[in-house]
Image (cartoon, rainbow, N blue to C red; front, side):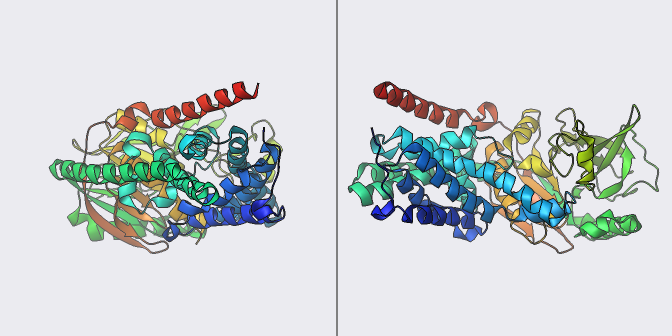
Length: 503
C-alpha cells in the first residue's frame, strides 16, 4: 500500500508546476497542430505526478493540469459565448470556467485512477487507464489525444478499426515507456510501445495502398464547394440576405461548368423555407435555377400548435430549383441553437437573447442528389462525433458532407480543431468527405484522411475537386467502439485484481 506523497524531484512544490507544464504542452498541441510531437512526451509529467502519490493528491494535480490545458485549448469558448450566445463578457467568463473545470476532470480522473491502480506489466497501466477514461468520460467536445496527430495520415489508418483510441493508446504508452526508462531503467515498456507504434505504421502503409486502390476503381464525382465568407453581422442583418445569396450564386456560377454538384454551407438561406414543399416561391428560393444540383444549408419550418417549429436543415435542389430532399440537424448545440433548461425556467432566455429555439430532427436521412450520389449529411457539430456518420453510411451514403458555419468563433483555434476531429469520420467510414463552411476551413478529405483541397479562413472563394463514391462498411462502422471497449475491459480486469489484492 503506497501512502507516501513524494513530490516530483523530491520537492512537493515542484509537483503543481510539473502538472501545469504538462497541461500547457497538451493544450498547445491542440491549438497548433504543427506541434504534433509534443503529446508523445507531454504526458510524462502526468505519469510522474501519479507515481507514489495518494489517489486524491494525484487527482488534484491532474485536475490542475487539465484546467491549464483545457483553458489554453478552448479559450475560444469565451468568444463563442459572447457571439453565439449573446452573453456579456463577465457572464461569458463565468460560463467559460464551467466547461473548463468539467473537461479538466478527465485528466484528474486519469491521474487519480492511475495512482490507485499501480503498475502493470510492460507499463500498460497508463495507456489502459487513458483509453478507458477517454471512452467513458462524458464531454461536450469529445477531444482525444489522437486528434493532435491528424496531419500524420499514416498514423490515422487504424481509425477504420477503432476510431482514434488505438493511436491515443500508443501515444500514452510511449510516454509511459519514457518514464519507466528514466525512473527504473526498465526496457520492457519501451519494447511494447515500440511494437504497437510499428504495427500502427505497418497497418497504415497497408491501408493507404488498399484504400487508394479502391478509390481509383470507384466512380468519380466532381464537387464544387463554395465559401462565401459572410460575417456574423451580415448574416444576421435582413438587409443583406439577398446580397449574401448573390455572392454565393456568383461564386457558384464561376465553377459550375466544371462540377457535377454544388455545395453551400450551413444556414446560407436565412429566410426559412417551408418543410415538405417541393416548389418554393422564387422570391424565397436561395437559388431558383441552379446550373447544377445544389446542396445548401438553410432554415426550415413546420407548423406547430401555437406557432411553428424551426429546424437547421440541409436541402437538395435540382436544376429546376425543386426541393427534392432534406435533412434536419439532430444534435443541437447548447447555448447556440437551444438554451438548456429554458423550457423549465423561461427567465434564462433573458440572459441569452441570441440563443436559438431550434427543434432537433427526428431521424437520419441520406440525401439523394443524383442516381449515383448519396450524401450522408452532417451539420456543424455532427461531424465531431462518430455516430451520425456511422448511421448515414449504414443507410447507404457513399459521400459524407458537413455543412458548417464557424464564423461564430472568429480568428481562433476552433476551425482547426473542428477539422482535426472531423477528419476521423472519413477514415472510420472510408468515405470521401466534403466540409463546406461559411468562413473556413472549407476542405475536401479523402477516405484516407488526407486533405486534398482547402480554403483558408475568412476568404470568399470556391474550390473544385474530384472525389470518389465508395461503398462497403468498415469494422468500425459495424461495431463502433468495440476495440476501446475491449481495452477498457482490460483495465477493469486489472482494477478488480487490484481491489481483490487490497482486500
